Length: 336
Image (cartoon, rainbow, N blue to C red; front, side, top):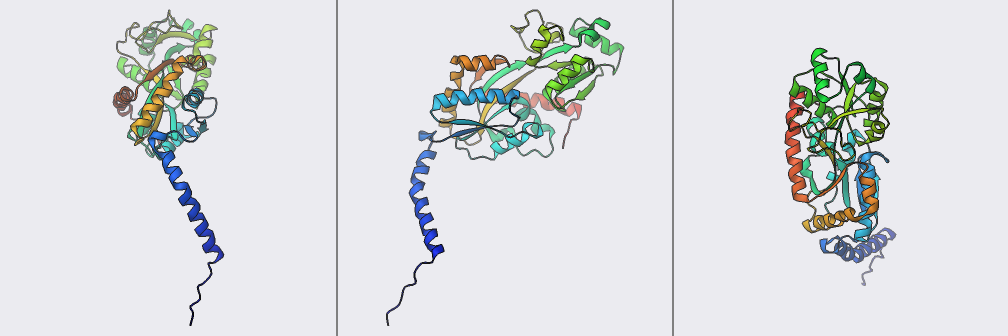
């Protein structure tokens, strides 16, 4: 008796077709995923902040440059929320294949993992590619408050705080923000009591100083137009050297506070485990921003362009994380 062979069902036939398609595509995909052939498709840069923010502006300049240098589309994907932690956490969990990258600021890497109890990542989850930008803070005060209280220098601010405990209020973009930690560090170092008022953004804190709601803060470069207009009074900058844009404003060291150097940076990262050959190629492509007039115009308004290589960038991150840990523990800062 002849045995009849069952005809394949429609579902079986479909599965066989899909398997055949996958097997045909697999060699091409495997070839594309090899470091030597990278990049072979679109690269995504994740930003943990909204479109138009400080970090987003930098990321779009980076995407433009990388796209030109690498010959593949580079898109920016905004994933805002939790002070940048949502987007940063997504990249930490991404495949280390060079197709998902991160542009973020120093708070996200060196501070957030130390103050947020439920954060999903640590600095070790990332491979540094390049620091892109470094910028000092500017100690600004409300001009009317300064005139009324004869405040003309950083030392005058501290002298006022000693005469009037808990009377100085300063702002920042939120608890644990670098501007917050820097002012807390300065207050602790000088032995004075000050009151921190957190806002949802640096721009809101700046508006509070402009209106007289706050007395002072460590502000970003976004304060430069307000300083030029006489609406904010700059007293010092938190860098080792004076800013070219404010040549008459002393450094904190010149104002009497040696070694008070606090800057915030933006950097490019890949997930930990990304092949060194891809990291090297990314760094070389990023360095091209130094020769790009468009990139220089965009970044020079946010800070100083600094294309720091992966290894020294990683060392900088480790040192800053250790330094901020002391401040965070002393101030007992912990957030859910």
